[in-house]
Structures are given as structure tokens and as C-alpha cells.
Length: 178
Image 1: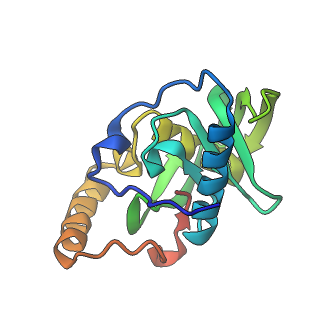
Image 2: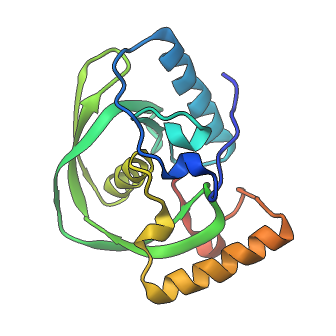
Image 3: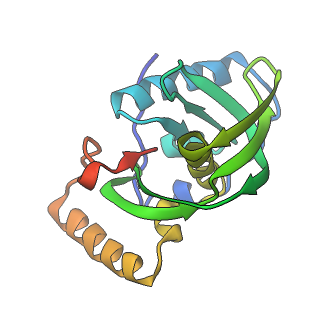
């Protein structure tokens, strides 16, 4: 397993919708292993393929029970609302309170082609929604209200001017989902 470079906001690959995975191959499994290593090194809870420059619809994650991979995920249902601070390693060092559905029903397949169906809530639901956003070319900053967006633009300009791309910390204990 070899960690890969995480793409940062401004990289056009992050804005392109990923394509469906049509074949489960050894190369895909090796990429998933590399992504898990990257996620652990960052550290983060999840990582979508576009974040390492690969336009395929899958992500890896680990909420403490060991790594998982979900290929061609979709959300079948969602319910409720949950406001929680969220960050992203593709938007390094910044985090914001983001409103997302509290519960979701996620479906997809694993690397062996087995069906995956997960009823997720709170942190797990947020993680899956965050990773699916990446697969659709959506970034955390796209969820900000007008005031947050203004602050984000200022903070991102300051980061760009400082040359900082640190992915080691998120202010205010923000959740770095990747």
C-alpha cells in the first residue's frame, strides 16, 4: 500500500463527476488499498477516488471498525437534519458547520461485487454524504451559506498566499472527512 497525493481545492479533477465503475479488477483493489493508506496517513475517516485524481465512483472509509470500500454508491433515502462541523482534506485546515440529512440509506457494492446496503445515521451518514459529494464533483464549500462562503474565500486566499497546504489539522476540532 502506497499513500497517494490528496488533490486540493482548485484542482479541476475535484469538480468533475466520477464515472461508474464497470469492472472490479485487481488494479481497483490495489487503488483502494492505496487510498486506505492515504486516508490513515492524512488522517481522515474517508477518501473518495477523485481526491487522489481517479475519476471512478467509489470511496474508502473507516469509522473504527476497519476499512470498507463502497463502489458505485447511491443514497436511496434520507431523513431529518443534523448540523455539525465538517472539514475536508481537499480544503485543508478549514471547517464549517454544515446541515445535512441525519439518516440515510446507502446502497452500492463492495470490491467483491457483493451488494452493500447500509442504514446510517449521524457521523456515518455524514461521512457517506460527504464522500458522495466528491463523486459528484461537489466540495464542502458548495454547502456554505453566504456568510460562510465569504469567510471561506478569504481563508482560502490567505492559505494560497501563505503556500500552506497542511492537512494535519482542522480548526475548532473540525471533522476531517476527506
